[in-house]
Image 1 (cartoon, chains in turn green, yellow):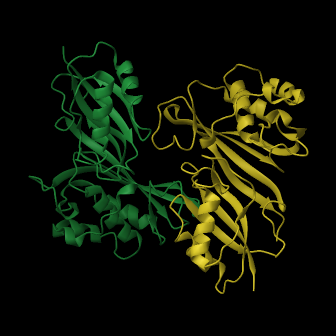
Image 2 (cartoon, each protein chain N blue to C red):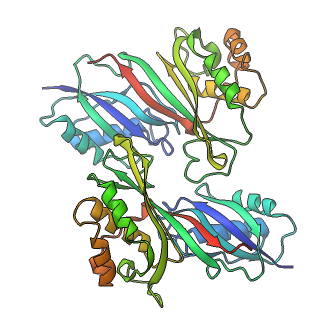
Image 3 (cartoon, rainbow over the protein chains, first blue to last red):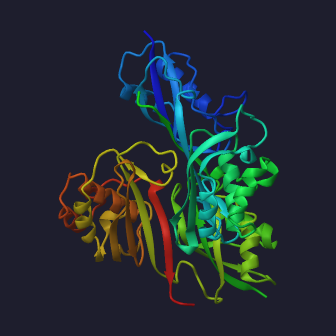
Length: 254
Length: 254
């Protein structure tokens, strides 16, 4: 008899063409479906809470699957899948789920982290996981800018073309600028954004905009103008993919 | 006219066959020599302070080079080399050096760090940089064991076969067990060893031995017996290469 599972998955997105299966490309979804097929002898669709782009990472992506049958427990299923995955993808946990659980529709919020390196040398260990800025930034100004992102607003100015939605209004519950390491040789900063939902490239566009304030090119108040303009052109550049991590996806308790 | 330079180099050793040039293999020394040849139009030998094995990383490896000529400064040389290196190797700095500077002979000490992950899931971001232990460890016991490594002693029991030296006596100035992150989901520990010199695989053999004490298989006092035995068989296993980082190499001020 069929069983439904919620998977929590981490992955290093560097050498993949993103989450979604594409012909002739290595994708996270493709690797998971392949590993589950070999682990369970069943062909299943892995439904992710959302797609991540090429080069984007996840610490807590969530996906749902329906297995026609599985006679063992969730820990056995976790191990069976993990033993068939490459080292860059890991199923952190598997939970039994109700038969109506849907990873996309049931999500009530997500949190992303975007990692920056401020000046310093190219680092062979961090370059896959950070955007290295060549100039210093004003952290206070960035924090002031970030505060102006918080709230239920129309984020049309932060939506990249290519995935229009019915509405561009989202409820951003947090936009935090965090100093991870203040060592001048390894000055690491993260911007974390939590929202009920995200537009296409919304976090990367917010980051590019906040960084522009950090560079002193615009004052923190400029964020309000960008939001009001309702036009992508007014916001900053899209930050590169490698700094972005999907931290977690929230659901009502099952 | 010839100029002599001291290079400080960082690298992620994961996808290389170690430091030293070998036919048909990608090596750190090989990539550096190739980048310097293309940057300066001169074929030079890059003399490293020591060799690192396949999979071993460096944060502060030192190498010496002699350029038949270079008319610009050290920062220009740094940029010229870095622009031709893969992303996994980076020259952190270049210093002008005296004509008798030799990266191996002039070294007065080195410090290595070995990184562990204690229990928890396979992590797609850390697996290249840590040895994941499947059992809990007693950190106090490991620190007591590490204290017994410190001092001028004959470390023959910690020398792997394949690179015998005239003498196996070394002066270990520090052997520290450091909790990097106490989060039970991401329990990260490092063992740092500083010595005037190292035998082949000495740090990895010390780590394997200290971890055995951490697992409770042996008491901290066992370290003294291992040292006295003067025989590799009595020590613990050789820890895998991916946890090891050459942190820095020390020289008398030039």
